[in-house]
Length: 170
Image (cartoon, rainbow, N blue to C red; front, side, top):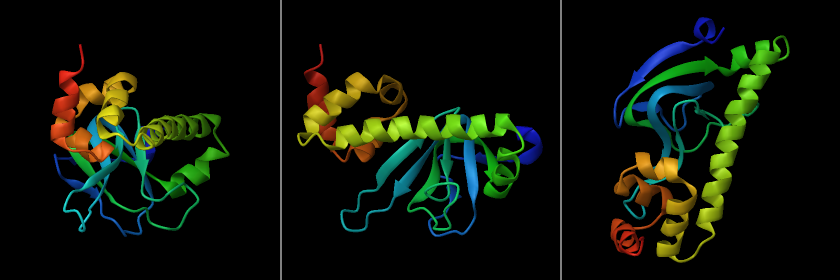
């Protein structure tokens, strides 16, 4: 079903899959690689990563499937990626007809929500070194995949903070 109702996209590292403000409505499902929602921050000249989608996860072009408001930030490749674009229209059409589609949407939503909850908890840690050490402990999959620069963008800390904190890890 998924292959019949999606379009396949390859995105390169730093390739833009979704441009902020675009009116398209898609769920981007990661089959391979790594994509992220990135906010360009003109004030600090440092971009921020809001969320990351690994294989088996997805990012949407709006805040949720029933929103008309384009989401903030661009969706870009962090690594070369293989993506399936599933239009919202198709999701809405089949979600009520086929329980498998409803399960797919729920699984993708729950994976995203779980990651965002973890990242929100981290954002509440005031001390940047402690924030990184908590990330190190509680998010080992992302830690293993992301570069120090990408982790710094995700946690709103500096690479030097990461390097100092890493010296404290046994």
